[in-house]
Amino acid sequence: TIEFTGALHATVIKQVRLKNPSKKTLVYNVILIGRDADDFVLPKGNTVTIAPKKQASLNVEFTIRFLRPAEAVLILASNATETATLTFPLKSKVKHTEP
Figure (tube, rainbow, N blue to C red):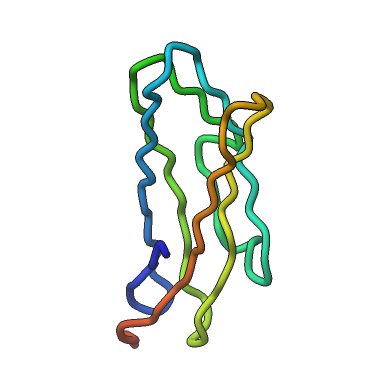
């Protein structure tokens, strides 16, 4: 689970690091689903390309708007049949509030 922890109304950015151990370029389509999926943002768009034997980072941004935990699932799906689909649960947690 990727946890977005911070103050109410704070913007938290988490980075997901992806590695490509293969000899082929990997291309993932990034999808956010779930009750609060619209509150999570992918600043660099919804496609990630990873060159062979390299790594790439995917930023996920979230602004904490409510006291209740927000939940969504980050899905990275590839068109290549030999590539696994990756899923990451996303959850927010309010640490404190500021006036």
